[in-house]
Length: 237
Image (cartoon, rainbow, N blue to C red; front, side, top):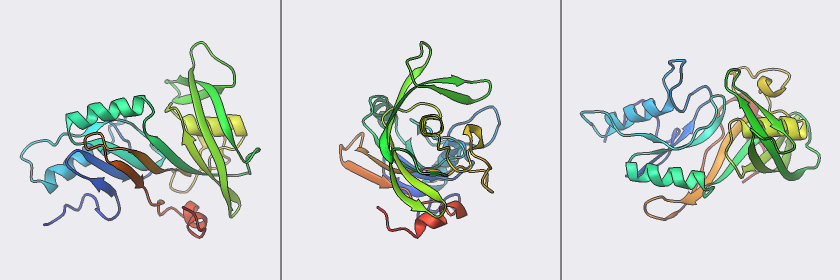
């Protein structure tokens, strides 16, 4: 069966069945359309499905969560309305165990811990501020982090967000630990990366399939960007 060239099933497609399409998103790609007019991941997915299955019309693609434009890694898309409804509920109720990897410029102190902030987003500037104490207009945000290794002149962190707030990992690491993510000039990094990505990768997702109830573990290979080369040399799971 001929495969459309829009995506490689050995690279971008991490999993596909009748209900789910799970993609390894590249840096710079929007998940869902915004006012920039740039083609989002959801449109690319619809075109991939239309070509692959020779659909005469548009293919259904449901977006149930997002990761930021400069972030890479796992994005789950729904191919059916049943899957979309159940995935929305699972993400809302924190039934998706998410693991991210990040590279930062200095060792966090302590090397492992939990961060809790109240986040307030400024939609005009597209930036989020983190408050250490409860804020009347803020949303509570919690994550757990641990330092996995020193990677060259950077440190590799593993992050498990308990909540899912806009820019949560980026602002909590920068504000709570004073360790902005490499390339993330919006939150205090000294310089951008050459490809304008940031060194934050949605590495692993563990959940129950929304229709079959099968236990799922999806892992996204690291992007080809040079910033991750030192991590590829490490022995990590």
